[in-house]
Image (cartoon, rainbow, N blue to C red; front, side):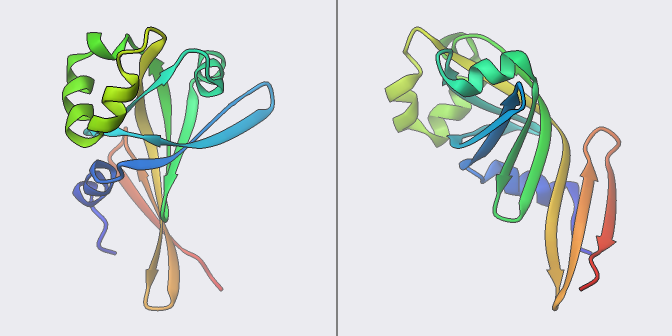
Length: 147
């Protein structure tokens, strides 16, 4: 299996837009968001009035997906985008239009998600596999999915 930490980071760095799932009080919601990353830390911004923000305040466990990648992590609410230099630099580089539209708004806040797990659905020929990467342990586990 040809998966490496670098290959996963390359995918994350090029996601651009992905689906974020958040939940609180037995209600799960999902939506597309624009993201940037620094290693396995994924950043996005949102308004404090939105459901995703309120759910993260209540439950810091979140998930992302794009294509055949599923990622889990723990969210941390940071500061206003203009007060987070790393985020602002990266976000301007990848999402300038979104930065101009939203990052100046008073209620905007940066969310940082420390990824803990990445799972990839991978085919080798016609055989499916689940590739699991534990970020904290830097360990891969590949499971053959019998069909």
